[in-house]
Length: 124
Image 1 (cartoon, rainbow, N blue to C red):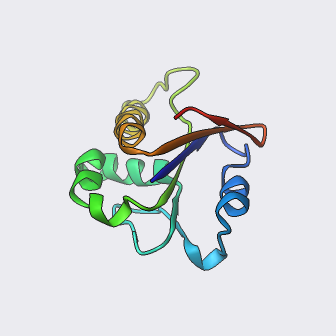
Image 2: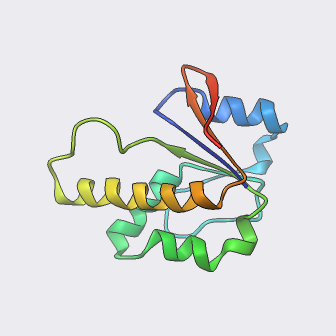
């Protein structure tokens, strides 16, 4: 699995499309508590973690339970865990859950890439 992280509008998806020859039909965009791991690339994982926080679900447990389905995938997550700590409890829980999931995915990944200003920085 390749795990790509980076801030908003830093070029994560552009990088993934070019590096892995992705077509639009290869990409699933998270917007709830279910993920279509049948796609080669899953993006907006931070939106999945927000939906999990709102539903009281454990994002790490979900990924662990579906490991065989995503082990060859390209996973993309926006960095929401740097900077000022959010004031609202839900936003703090979202940030924490995203951080927990990113730690898990980074440990499981064969390759971890951070995109900053469109540039690739290999972390693993």
